[in-house]
Length: 418
Image (cartoon, rainbow, N blue to C red; front, side, top):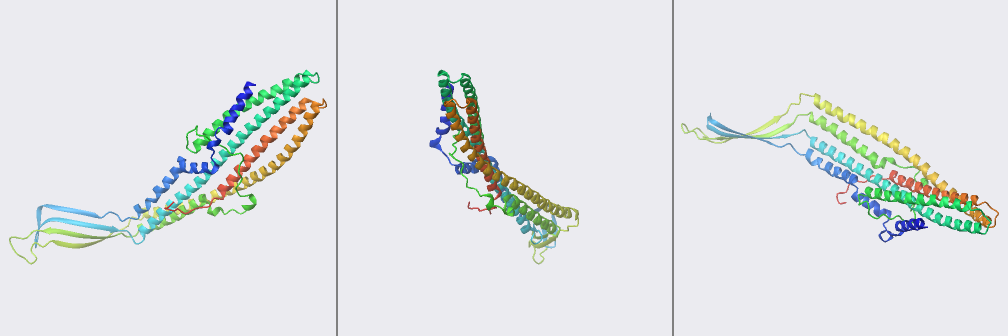
């Protein structure tokens, strides 16, 4: 009896100790989105990618050359004391725009990757939440079943004392009770472990309270409403679209970088006055505009860069096709799992109802010495098994609908004001 009281106390702590601090699933999803370090890393990488555009879209730094003459170089107007040369190179028209576009598209690809990771994180949180729900309610069922076994023990003991039943029936109940107590203890430990894993997923302290609602709320789409999923708008596929567009812009950059670069500059010389003569404009500093053109005659690197970009476009397109096929496969499996769970839930409801009626008849028959007590115990175990199977089916249905929510995730555009 002490063991039973211990189990009941443990379960009461699980089910009622945290009710004052109850949090809905949506709150857990919000915590995960804000705290999960892997998701934060994906967003940080996106923010870093945004900083590529101003880097690649800037002009190269101008070049300033200063020459000071140890021995004065004589000119007709006087000796040169110093010379300054300033040169600014300009890439071919449209090169900077193409570079900026490629960087922006690649940043957008990183953002879509973040969205896909966020959707998958939400699925993992929902899945872990459903597993907690199943285990917590399984423990509750077994505690209730333990109370039923206690009542059976009292009944069989009473009949033994009256001489209408064998003591073996009491022993059989004790065996079932010991098994139930051990199972509850083990599952209570497993529940604590799952709660810690759930908190790690949310990047919280492992001992943070986790409260599960009384029922799994089914708010997701039914399969009849998602017969035609537009996977082309899924972030995982949009990511590859943006990558392909980015590599297309890089191919354009490679073409333009193979064209001449133009340079504009200014040459300024400081001239000292001649003392041995006085020519016109004596000692006047010399200013000379300059223009330069690069000669991209070594073509291999430009052709290689262009070919590389074209191959990466092909790779992005192939990755997209492969990922879409996987999403379609997951979708078909998820539809099957959802329909299977719905049918099993309906079956278990019918079986539990019939089994409860049969159990009542068996208990009544045992009390009247018309039924074998072993049949009573067997039917009781069947009812417990059906209830646990119903919980498992409910969990699988919830997980399948969570997966459907991920599969129906739509792409979003980045908003700086978010």
